[in-house]
Length: 264
Image 1 (cartoon, rainbow, N blue to C red):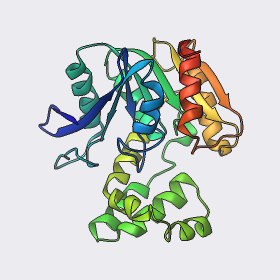
Image 2 (image 1 turned 180 degrees about the horizontal axis):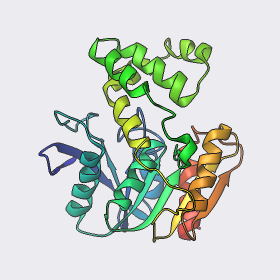
Image 3 (image 1 turned 90 degrees about the vertical axis):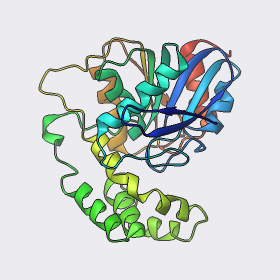
Image 4 (image 1 turned 60 degrees about the horizontal axis):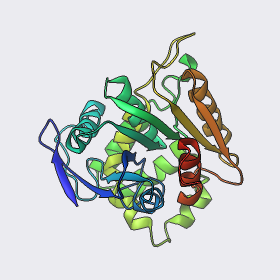
């Protein structure tokens, strides 16, 4: 494990796996640097061909947290990682981590390529405010010590899982890990609400971009992936057959390496 200090002094923990051209993996909600879709399991699959950086976003794992959250602080975290690497890197973002990666590029960070897995973007003007009140409710629950309730609120009203499924998840071994990250859920809502487009606008992204979706994912996520690809000039949209939002790292790694034309 290595660490780097962000602009506000927060310590960000990261690991480097493999050698070659660097790619930084940015996880989404409930993810740290050990999570399958944007952590070490994916890193190990990419490592024979790339230098892979996995990190704990602020408030998670071995990273610190600031006294007051802002999306800009997380962008600074990514900037600190890129500076510590000393090389221009690719960025891969999973779910809300994809929106954070996009936000970093829109803020002026230099990257060579972008890969997004199902970014939950609400780009159209009519979608603005779809999570109004949710961040406040989740924050109030966490502040009141109702961390499990905050997780349920997020899974049901943001992720869109059926209440019966979430009730069953409360008995699963991984449930305590979700509850432990409850305080970061308002961060996710802030990130996903931070990119908006007006009529006829395109995302000002001028690097090669791959957008990945699963054909079994919810219609809203697939529509967001398609819209993201449509709004980034020259981007590529890849659909993973038989996969959903919890697609396995093998499938994700395969799509990335095929697009990069390595590892064949």
